[in-house]
Image 1 (cartoon, rainbow, N blue to C red):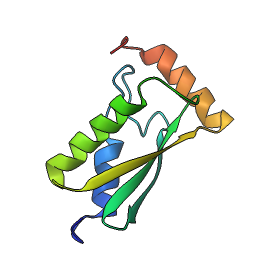
Image 2 (cartoon, rainbow, N blue to C red; image 1 turned 180 degrees about the vertical axis):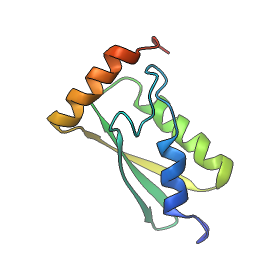
Image 3 (cartoon, one colour; image 1 turned 30 degrees about the vertical axis):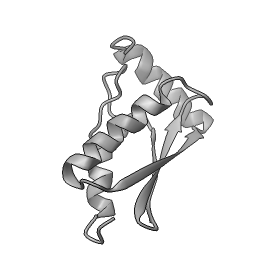
Image 4 (cartoon, rainbow, N blue to C red; image 1 turned 120 degrees about the horizontal axis):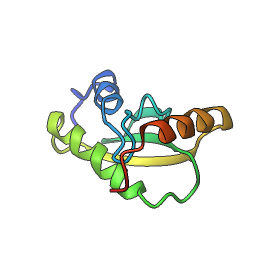
Length: 103
C-alpha cells in the first residue's frame, strides 16, 4: 500500500456507500467502525446487526471496489463485528423505514 493512502479519505469513501438493501449509507446505519493501516494494507471494521449475515462478502466487495477507484492496488481486509444494542436498534428502525428490497 502506498504511504499516500489517507485514512481520512478512505473514511469519507466508506461513509458515502449506500447499503444495497436499505436506502441509507453505512455511516447513517451505524455500520462503520475503525479503519486502520496495517502493514501494507487497510483493515476496516464493519458493524453488522447480527452475526453471520449472508451478505458480508457482498458488502466487503462493495467497499473494496469504491476504495480501488481512488487507491488502486490497496489491499483491504475486514473485521466484521456485531453492533451494540443501541446501534442495532437504530439500524433496524432505519432498515424498516428505508427498505429497498433484497439484492
